[in-house]
Image 1: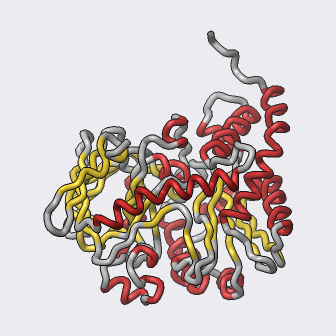
Image 2: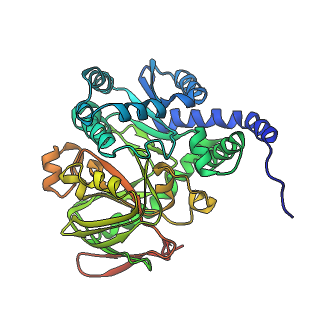
Image 3: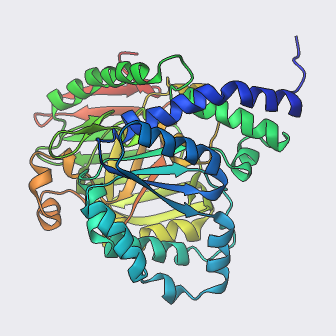
Length: 426
């Protein structure tokens, strides 16, 4: 039986039916995502096009006891105009008012909600060095804000909401209303927010991480070996005292929160000087509104020594050239192909979603929580222990359906971790 295409009228009716689920999703972001404390400042960064959903998030934040909510708006079109008309040198400094805004909010103990919704091609044709400079400036000059996120001092959560240009990319050929409706359904499903009680569903989801974390942390692998039919053949060494994490995060004083909704990954920070071999991408990378696709990266002694891309090589170069740390790995993440995102068959063209459909690596900064005593270490001490330091962190997906990953213990024992894109016990 062939079902007729969804009509605009049906999509609009469907959106009305989704309103209670969208409200539950907003509540999930507030109560589980950042887990707002009574009286706490909540900061919401959002695209202007997501204003209706943002208002729901703000209402849920106040309902959860927030002392005050600050909303910081952004707009793809305005951002593009700035990059078109302003010289690169301007973006190498974050304006003082922006530094004061972000640093003071972080200093006062705010939690941060980042609503993710962008046109994947927003900056197509823009010199990638400009957004790279702006990102580097913000990450190096807004020091209190950046440390608050890097060290999980300030609870934070990234969660998606549709914008029209994004929906068009994910569901080409559909009317805008239909594409938005489909994208909302995909977001709610992959975030496990389409059931009757998303908060309870997330507690169950979080518990499912424990088996994989226990296995990895008990084995304390010395290095991992990745192979795939596409040519990937890469070894990545682990730091001494590394810890795998996943699911729920915690502030240094033990306050739980979920940095990503959705999340399917377990991850750690490898030894920044111990990566050798070549790795091929499994999915496109969207970075600052520019696409990088069909690319490979070669490592020697932990550092990128060569790379190429069929699409977006200049953008890939801008990532690797950000600073010295951007040419080293800060994260390895393991994700089975048996997840709602991968099984949906939807390519989201957004890293928040696509990284949770595929094993991935990240160039740039590593995580203090991924090494014993990391929260008490300075950046210099983290570097000495092998955890990467950088002003950027860019995930790229490498998990093909046939990827195999073997862990090698310090005594030379080989343990199959992944086989054909899934955990060996799946």
